[in-house]
Each structure stands twice: as structure tokens, then as C-alpha cells.
Image 1 (cartoon, rainbow, N blue to C red):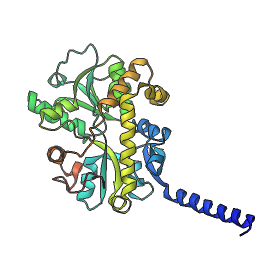
Image 2: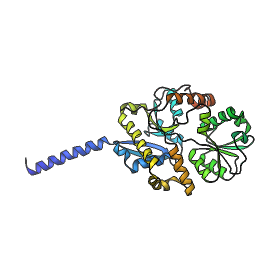
Image 3: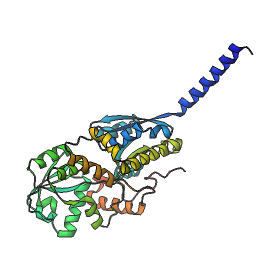
Image 4: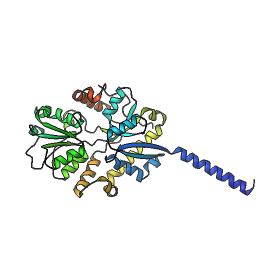
Length: 324
């Protein structure tokens, strides 16, 4: 073989290896809320190459609402979204093969103005409560059940409710237009940093109702087909997520890098958001399905089929089980 032939053969072999390596790197499409806290984790994954280390490339698209992400997911336009496992359970009960990978156990709660005389939910009777979401918001339902159990008060009939998007509830509460506000954890952190006072958080209420506050509520959602046909990719997503969590749990410098993306208006907000995210990191390992089943049954009792559909018990296969 001539020198030129050997060079040509070597180039061909190198090209084959390059094509093979490229083919092995799969793209995982994710659609998430543009300003959701999950972006901090996804940015960490991308910045440190945790996706590449697991053999895939994460492609993140921001959307305006969770419902838009769900429509895209159900239509096959994206591979992964972020939602709560109760929605996944509802979909599985309806025959849709979706699977949940834990992301966060962080939940919100109720805050009141700093000068409010309220010391418990019972003291909000007759007042105006702002609620992020709608009448079937899970935090609102849990807090209603907690108020009934602990104080014998009916928040729904005993208060005026104002439902709205989290930023709207944040704004109206900070302007002093509400006697109390129920919001997502990161808005609640900003409200506390801005001088409002926490009355009770959802985790405390859930625990009083016999639920396990360590059950992660939010997570990544993928299809059962992907789990079966490409388990390495699904495991890779779970591993990359855990690597990002481990870094964010321990490294303050990583938060300094993310600060510009966190929309923190002050040092107090920044520290509150960092602490809240860290507190919401779920433990590694499988989810306690018994605890999850108890939560689903409680939510079914509170919200009925409008909330959980036909899911009256935890459907098998709701939670991702690593293949290795």
C-alpha cells in the first residue's frame, strides 16, 4: 500500500470513529418554564458538561406556561418536561405511559404582612388570601385540610380568595393588598426577604396531615417508551440531575455564577433563593411509594376527579427505577 493509500485509509477510519462517536451522542429535548428554578439546575448541567459525561446533549427550550410544555410533550414535540407526579399518576390512570424522575421537594406556604396580627391560619378568617394558581392548587388544598384539622376552620368559605399567576400574587402581596398569600417556594422566599412573615409552610401542613414532606413533588417527566427503548438516556438524565444537585448543594461559587440568572433583586433574596433550592433537594434513592400513595389518596379526597382523574391509588410504574 502506498503512503497516500495508507493516509486515505487512516482518514477513513478516523472519520468512521468520529461519525460513530457523534451518533452515540443523543439530543434530549426539554421544555421548561422560562423563569422556573429548574433552569438553574439545567444551566449547571450544561455548563459543567454533566449531560455530555452521560452521553447525551441537553437542548433546553423555555416556554411561557406549564400547560404549553404539557401540550408539547403530549404531542411528541419535546422529550422531557417538569411537572408534579400527581399529574403523571393521573395520566397513567388514563392510559398514558408517562414516568416521573424526582427533581425537587420544595413547596411554598403562606406569608402575611410583617405587621399582621395573624399567628395561625385561623386568624385569616374574614380576610383576603392570594393564591398562586387556581382553586385546585395543591398547596391550597393541603392548607385547607390542615386548617380544618388543626383549628376547625373552613378557609374556602371563611375567606375571600384571589387566584392568579405567581408574579401577580407576589406583587399584590408586597403592595399590602392581601391579608395572606400562598405562593410557590421561590416567590415565597423573595416575599420573606422583602419583609413578609411566614405563617406556615406546606411541608408542615402536609406532615400534620400524616404525609411525608420528603416526598418530591416536582420532577422530570419522560415517556415509558423512552424508558424501555433508551434506558441509558433516561438514567443519564437522572445522573446528570443528581450531579448538578450535588454541586449546587456544596459549592457557593456555583451560585455566584448563577446569580444573574436568578432574578434576585437583593443579597437577601439571593441568599433566600439559594437556601430554598438547597432545602428542596430530595435525597438520592427510590421514592417511598407508600408515602406517595397516601398523598395521592388525600389529594383525591380533597380535589376529586377534577384534580387526579381516575387515579384513586398510585399507579404502578409512576416513578423511574434506574436500570442499573
